[in-house]
Image 1 (tube, rainbow, N blue to C red):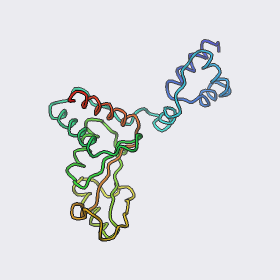
Image 2 (tube, rainbow, N blue to C red):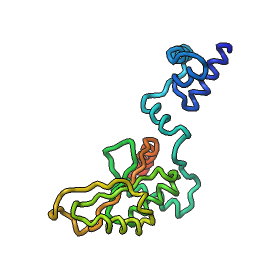
Image 3 (cartoon, rainbow, N blue to C red):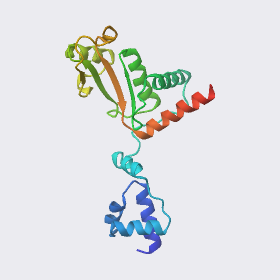
Image 4 (tube, one colour):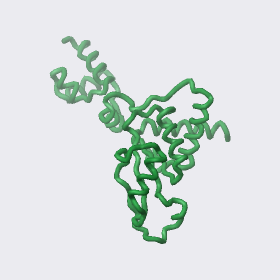
Length: 202
């Protein structure tokens, strides 16, 4: 294979998400040789975070943002962004996460993720945060019914050992539900949407 064909193959394979080691194995070169050729021909390499993302998502993004929204979908998008801005977790920049004790708000955010962000089935995680003295089975049944979600879809719960003196107990008799999509690309898109919206209205 000529050098030009080798470089072309490297570019194509790298674009598809293959690592230098994977490309070397397919072309019969060491990974060091592949990196040398990439540097020599100014083929930009992915950052560590980008490489990790590609490895975790070999088939591309697990979501597809919907375009050409109807008026109802525009309203849902605005509601979803409002919830994310006001209630979403800000500490983890690698995921989209929202917690609330109101099933109606959780449902709105779930609809936003599914219908506006196009998050694929199985990529949305759910779990409950409960006080240790709360009836876990009743809480699971409460949330499963109101979110129209089978119990097996809930992941391991977070149990808080605060006894009977926790503040706000009357407001969250069945605990708090958390919705999470662990995807840094989607998180970045939502952050950009929020920032753009804030700039337009400030």
